Amino acid sequence: MTSISAVIITYNEENNIERCIKSLQQVADEVVVLDSYSTDNTKSISEKLGARFVSYQFENHIQQKNKAIEFAAHDWVLSLDADEALDDQLIQSINEVKKIATIFWL
Image (tube, rainbow, N blue to C red):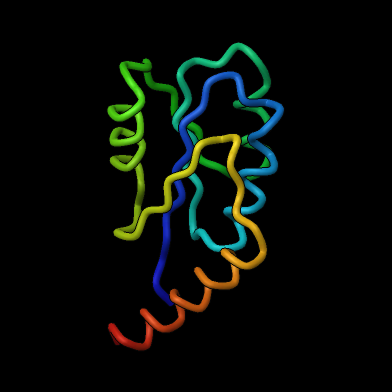
């Protein structure tokens, strides 16, 4: 099946990160959290859920999003903010596209 990396940029997102990661785990083959040196539990929650956690100094929103993509292992990348999460319909749609893409590119 086609592989997807999910990337999330964060700063002090302990209240949101679990929901975000758990939704992405249903479609992504890896989850990368690019954090701007949070002072809360963002790192421990992310790592507990199996995400790869990377710290990087925040420059601006676009540069942080682009930097997160650099850490992605796969060609297909899904980028979310920590306060976002995939709903059931989107999860189903992404998984269907992954299957179709795998067949198409075999």
